[in-house]
Amino acid sequence: MRIETVAVKAGLEPEGASRAIAPSITLSTTFERGEDGSYPGGFDYSRSGNPNRRALEVALAALEGGPEAVAFPSGMAATFSVIFSLSPGDHVVAADDAYYGTGVLLRDQFSERGIEASFVDMTDLNEVRSAMRPNTRLVWMETPSNPLIRISDVEGLAGIAREGGALSCCDNTWATPLLQRPLELGADLVMHSTTKYFGGHSDVTGGAVIVREPGATLEALRKMQSDGGLIPSPFDAWLTRRGLESLAARMAMHCDNALELARFLDAHPGVERVHYPGLEDDPGHALAARQMSGFGGMLAFDVVGGRDEAFAVAAAVNVIARATSLGGTHSLIEHRASVEGPTTRAPENLLRMSVGLEHPEDLKEDLALALAHAVR
Ligand SMILES: *Cc1c(COP(=O)(O)O)cnc(C)c1O
Image 1 (cartoon, rainbow, N blue to C red):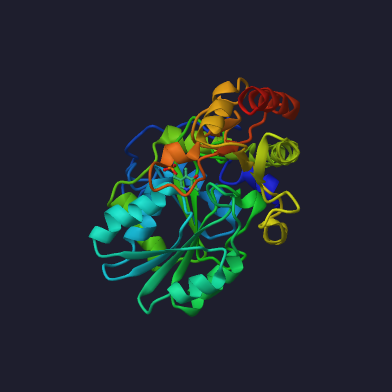
Image 2: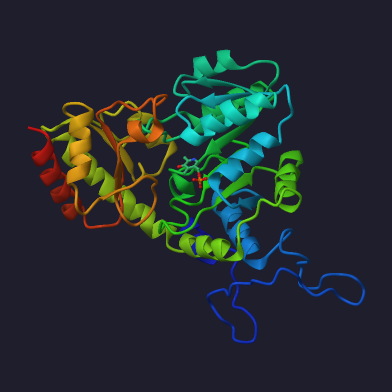
């Protein structure tokens, strides 16, 4: 089955006597046991398993091409669980522009518990190679990255990890398996914030990890669910599974709209620079064209001027919403530097956009008016 079909069908069967095509939400926390002590329905208690979570995990595994997926209540719970599977004394090499919360987690929570991390520029394979130590157990990559939409070489990074005896994990939230297939490129684990494109409508928080093969890491992740209690609710799992059904159609439109907007902004005198790998002169273009099948729905641009001008543009939009996050139907714009605070790597004149599913002409008109108003 092709990925568009997988996104619609995987993990779902017509249900029960009604033969309902859309799955129902199973709220029961407990499931009947057979006379012989077995669980004929395949579930015993909701912390260890639930039909909606199961359907979601089957679909996520199929989409990324791994044998199993483990669903979590948020992207950060997924990241937390991967790092928690390491031991004190282990070392992590992480992208210096990984999701802001990933850096915070490694610096604040895990360094206190004896897991060290080095933060490196993952677009430079030599820098990654020299950051590897004998105790490096995990290489954490994320591409495209935030906020400069930079592209790093998944195959190259996975190779460096493997040579060093470490696992590689790719945060594939921004690309989704529709555009980028980390397991095929050699990564051991794929992590997702399903809050973004998978849910797709800005109405459900979730996360997942997909493994390349069964083994110790998969077992550790399953224990985070069954023993640690890190599970999504049945409704959240249902919403996320439902979001997947339209993922392929949405991603195609996100990519088209983002490219059109990037070209428009690139030609605009009020814009100093556009960060989008779909533009031919973007530093990540060649690599993205090779390792991705589309350039994604995220872009950033530097407004002519500084912080005040960037704020003024964000203040003047009407169709585009001023909000953080990404991957939903609504286009969102945000000033990353003020969201991330003093340790930010975002330029003060940068605005990040999650390009949604509105008509691109409406988005262009909105930005044109905002730029005319703010940048003189
Ligand atoms: C949002 C996001 C996360 C964190 O996920 P939550 O669902 O907010 O916990 C991690 N990585 C990336 C790339 C994200 O965009």
